[in-house]
Length: 115
Image 1 (tube, rainbow, N blue to C red):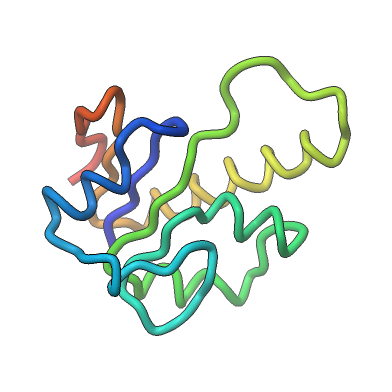
Image 2: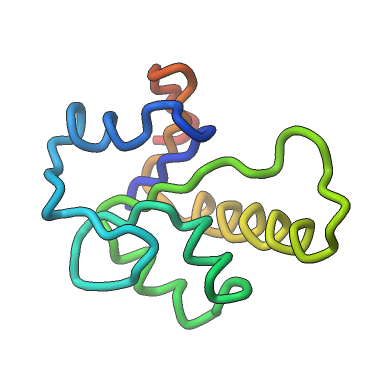
């Protein structure tokens, strides 16, 4: 699995399509299904109220998992928002440990962190 992370609007989706060659039909937005690319892991965690352990194997079986970096910047006042950011960060840490490749996108430029 390739884990692609980066800020909002950093070019993650373009990287997946233009560099890695996946089309729109290959991408699922915040939904675990049969498609090889999961976009917006952070939104899946938000809508489901946290990470679910049973997601780990299906996520690792994906070709690509894409997630926004949400832990930078001002710490939210809301405990719910802080918990969500914590869950996203811990999930990405677990996925990165198991991923074959980890790429961080900054200003449209890929930085290979692992693999």
